[in-house]
Length: 247
Image (cartoon, rainbow, N blue to C red; front, side, top):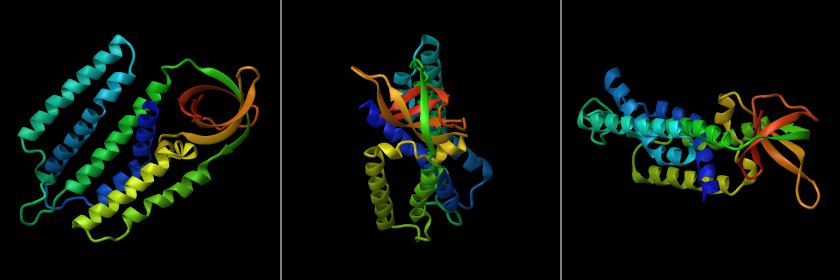
């Protein structure tokens, strides 16, 4: 269950740039900067609330748990204040005359904020486990695979006329298929353009993993900020399956 949740989180992370671009394309017109800023803050708060329970489960230590609880309480307070104060006005489907609805842009912003928060949570969660030192060989950077993955960004950015349930249904089916393929593919979990934006590189490498009764060679994916070469020694932390965070 936790492995599926982690893969779902990485799927959300992988589409953060697309969500930001989509928000720009659907940016509402006619609203003041302060109104849009308040609506944006509320979307970030909603994203934090969606991640509150997983964060509370993932963190360890009394101090970290109290920080998560405090952040959750603050988010609830801001959410209640924003809703009661009308911060969601730009998200209304029936926008006032000479204004356009920001619902789609708001959802895209929420998705992007959720992805950024998940990055922090996943990296924090990986560091809960003790490091293991590996010697790696046959390293292959996966930048080309990431570039190929960007092709999945193209369809949502095509000039499709806004509005109508058919367009919403088409986008929903498209994302559902991408999600199914992503969570069922070991090789796609770290093929993640967003992680490149955070300065990480993705490598496929070979290492010897100690098993019983004899050590065995295994190919793994490594997420790291280092430039890896054959015979490098790396300290690794698990991200699930054959995916690891290397330092």
